[in-house]
Length: 424
Image (cartoon, rainbow, N blue to C red; front, side, top):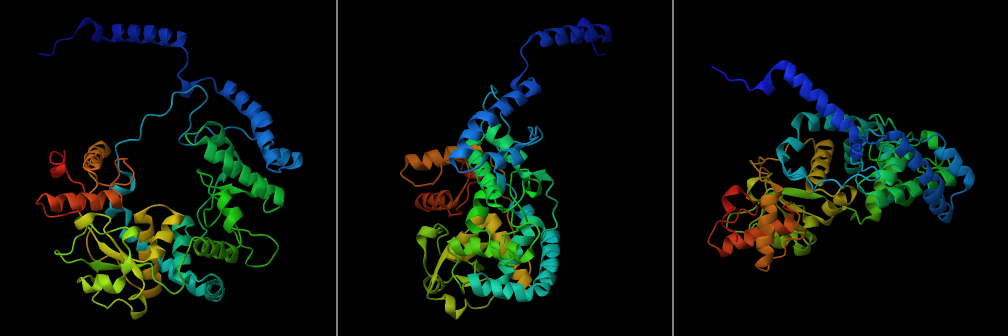
């Protein structure tokens, strides 16, 4: 028999809810649900004073400001907003972002679809891509892979007004200063005549056009490859593709080199040797017994050039020898998995290859707080783990591998639950 307290009958519950609602109505509104019209007024005052002053210092004319900002209102649907007076957001959630499910990141169905379309479009635009590769040294398949990953080869809808997004985030986001600078860069584009404000469409994060450049990247890297007078990364495929190549070239792409190779690292070779600061000629890695998992030899042209070990899931996933070009791909999006995705997709487009041969293990289930505790313990022992942020980057992985080896454990170079109580 279930017992009911008086508060649990329907009449009492309704009465209690009514009283609670009355009390709530007398309290100040929570910051995130505060009076939106009042915040809109603050936003318009911010545009008229702070933003206008900064824009004029940056050389933006009154005419451009009026044209670009006329009718702009806050977009309350965007993520990461912190309205005036709101408490700062809680610390990062416990998920490990890109580290949590690497297997899912490399969806075979998605990669196969992008590769098939990418091969077709690489053929369609072969002459343009050949000229771009000659100009910037970046292979066609890398350019097409980024194009596909960023905007579905220009087919992704970009429904947002970039000015509205950037202004909203410059006024009330977790990274106001960064978005203010991007808004000023967007206004500079309009001032220069690169694009009209009404045509400046982007993502919810303010990234523009087919290459998904932030406005500051547009100013640095956008190219008028079709020579029609302006760099149009929204509508001109030659401009979009050349701009991607120019970006990579300026960030240090090495002409004639691969991005990297899936490899097999023998058990008697330490996994704790990864990172761009541990580069050595690929011939030296090969001399240790590291081979390509495909069974092919490393290309002769690569043997004297530097390569680096990369074990993004430690011993629990695919292992790689990467070139400096891998780290150039990370300049486009600072993620090991992103750069691997682009490399794998490019190989599929160019060579018809498939998924990485080694499976991704069951990694990334640990809470960030647990990884953070391991990092702090390793730092206390004198190890360099890079950022102490609960994310297992390469310095954390190799420090963990070194600690495991010194303590009689088989190095896995990746945090797991079995190590939680051991590193103290």
